[in-house]
Image (cartoon, rainbow, N blue to C red):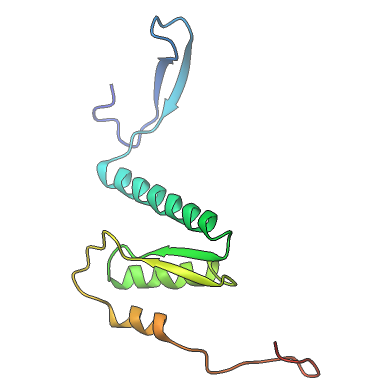
Length: 126
């Protein structure tokens, strides 16, 4: 029923019982294999993020580098800034990384130390 329906709205009738007594209509929009893999990947990352948050009592953040491309490095910058700012540390996961090399810019991001501290005038630095 879903052959040649990628991206189009399809109505399915499903049942929660083997005899089909309780039926309901479900609307789906099938996706292609690449989209499915992307969704499964995002689900895997979110599951890992939740595990790290729970195991660390919210003290650690999580980011996964899919590969060593510029796009993954840009995503790492987003993950480090938006989702992990203010955490005590961040788990950088490179499992299943299809890169084959280590992006030197990623090493630079992870090895960098702060060189400037700013405080408002009249307030003590923490």
